[in-house]
Length: 171
Length: 105
Image (cartoon, rainbow over all chains, first blue to last red; front, side, top):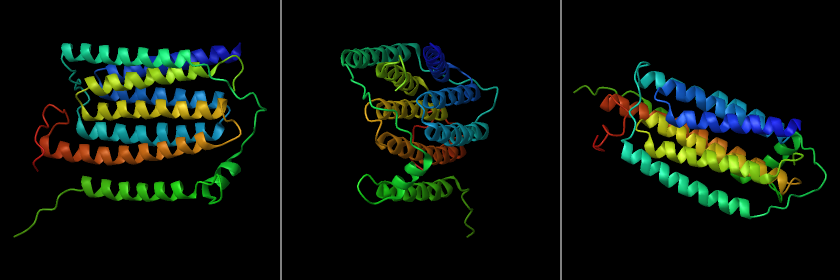
């Protein structure tokens, strides 16, 4: 009973704040609603008993990316400014297209019967996750780990180069 | 798995979140809000990975690593996108896609 109540509470929070994120006309509020969505998602991971993933979601997503977005909002727009929305015809067409896509996908999902694995609840701790992240044996993830670290380095350098102020060339 | 909650509930929530993100991406005219819609889409995909991992293959860790990699890619993407947005703001004094219609530097 407690599980259902918690799940529906988190689910409705996620959906309501997602809709508010894409419909509100104030950009900073949209960022705060996005933060609520990400925190509620971490709540879902806590319900699934994946504490490590919930912690990663809270620190990297809710902590890092939202702060980055809020910084860029403050750098590029005035707080009193309202966002320009698409014309009504385009909004209606987009709503129609997304509704059609959502109905199609939901019908497909609800028709398929997933058979959950009714094994015992395995308990992972962070040690297992970390060991398998750097292991190069079977079920090891050393290669994706290295690739993602190179990608992060490249993205970091690229972001600095792109956002750097152009220096005036004296001639 | 959670008692009394089937896997499809998670899939329904993540599907609706995904399409809300697509709606935002299609209707928003501000680059930063479009970026936020993309974050919503990525987050809904993460919910799918984690729920499948928990319900169908609870003995394995594949969903964990997919989710961690998706989060890392999302962080890298947000950083690069925001650098580009700031550069666009410097050149055009606006970040609405309607005003940024020339790719010439």
